[in-house]
Length: 229
Image (tube, rainbow, N blue to C red; front, side):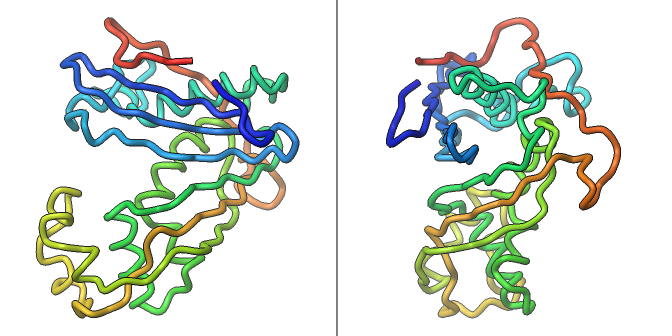
């Protein structure tokens, strides 16, 4: 755990049972309440091992996604260091959530499809991989996304960013561009920032009901992560 320019940052090294490793970083500004997804580099860990067996399981028969499990632990650690508590709910009050430097191939591809369909960047980003994976931990923390804003980044030709090899390695068809009517020279956006507005799940502006408590499921058997502090 380190502090940079007033932001408390947790940097975590993750080690899977087979010895493969990854790393994640999350931050919290205790003054503004902004929560930051700095990065999650877990591609070096086989997909089948990117799960933590928990009880209760977020996904029956599989457990909890490794990224979600680790983010929930990091949320708790950050709140503890910030000396705050939301009665078990990280999003007991509205927060801004920042996702930094988005270069995820799935997200870039999905945003390009949304733009081609006539959606604005702020509308299209909500149904992309990066926001969907952030949603897991936001919901578990008792929040919901009420809005999004995309800023920064740069444009580059689709054929340069969304190569057949890159698409395939990210679980998309090698022919994604052709299948979705995206010309090779179409200028896709990458390297951008996402700012999410997150409110308590039970707030009057929508949703209703009582948000679930932030429960960090205990790992079963051998823990699949190691936390470097």
